[in-house]
Amino acid sequence: MVFPTLSFLLFYIVVWPLSWGAVLLGQHTLHKLVIIGASYFFYAFWNWKLAFLLFTSVLLNWGAGRLIERHRGTPAQARIVTVAVALNLIILAFFKYFGWFAEEMNGLLRGLGLAREIPLFEIVLPVGISFFTFQGISYIVDLHRGDLDRARSLIDVMFFISFFPHLVAGPIVRAASFLPQLDRPPNPQRVFVGLGMLLILWGVFKKAVVAHWLALNLVDKAFFDPTAYGTVDLLAAVYGYAVQIYCDFSAYSDIAIGVAALLGYRFQRNFNQPYRAETLGDFWRRWHMSLSSWLRDYLYIPLGGNRAGGWRTYRNLLLTMLLGGIWHGAAWKFVIWGALHGGMLGVERFLSNNASKASLAPADRPMWRRAIAVLLIFHFVCFCWIFFRAENVARALEVIAGLGDFTRPSTLLTPLLAGLIALGIAVQFTPADLLQRLDGLYQHVPVWGVGVTTGVILLLLEIIGGDGTAAFIYFQF
Image (cartoon, rainbow, N blue to C red; front, side):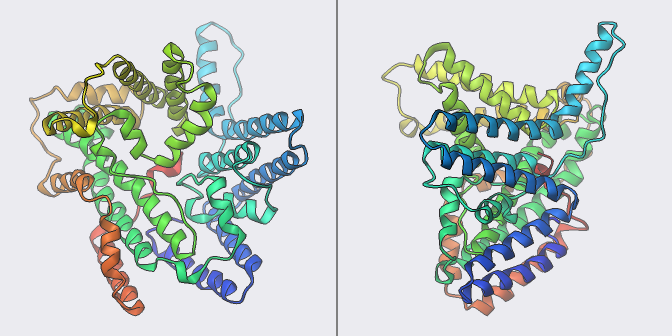
């Protein structure tokens, strides 16, 4: 079940009144059970058997939380956390990385002349497994650190991990920020209907129009056979993919935040105009903020962060980004993507540490220097996206080689596609609170007007978007 589809709309039309009906009747537990039941139906829509894996993850982390509570302040507490985190990662590694590991090891064994091979299994990758695994780890670690005041009930842990708006593609919600919201029923008077609707509409436009048209008519064709195209088309495809993946993933986050808001729950913002970043570090403070902050707080800082100084800081940056790359998928292209980002973050840190004390702060630099910095970071990110998008490393190298082929005329780029790329870049430089400003206007529209307006806009987007809605890119992660 994909967000901007008729099936999801019908699903939500049923879930929304049932959940609020339970709240208005004063049945908080029933409200939670309605959401949990809806979330498992939402997940089972892909493969009902994998719903048992999701429930297993819930039981594992709920049980670990109870044990942490029981052994609080004893040496056993740290051991429980270690085992629970390890079990989460083992489950993730088996489903996501076993096939890749077995293939690579078998290739190595054959290269060494050894006949024995690791058996391969047909393993179905559960949609969203990386997201709900990280959320389970968040619950355990936040409880261990004291960021959560107490272990929660099975219903609350199941609600937190399984909540359908963020279940399959994020944003990654922290236990410490979300679980306290379950202590009381959502307040109908504090639901920002206009902002939730605007987020959903903006997300649908980005996914169904911008990302869909760029993928279908430019990016997929160019990356399928880069040798058939020259500089103009391949460069347009690289820029197009930068816009596509931003619009695709930020669209899911916007819709998820809007859907959750209409149910009375708050998620943190996940994207903040990342392509206007002046440094790569700033890019990662703006791109997929829930993942980058998760990697910082649960991986980079525990590794030592920048406290040790010197080469250890560079090592920690590289390890964090390598693991961030592998988190996205079991392939060497993701390893290279993570290594490129980790290496450049290390270079930035080195240059920053050795810069003149008289150098200006970013906000005080001349506009031309800031513009050049934005262009450089944007093109570095685009270069890295080539490895991220390509089918494999060999195909990525074909794209890079084709960027120097000025002999082929353009056959893919059209004014419409160029306009969509320009729009995707332009929105990076609009006021950051634009949707909040529009919400101020929306608040003067009666509820029935909001509903009619939303319905008309969704119908128009369905017509413009064309036939079919491809799965979101991050469903595979």
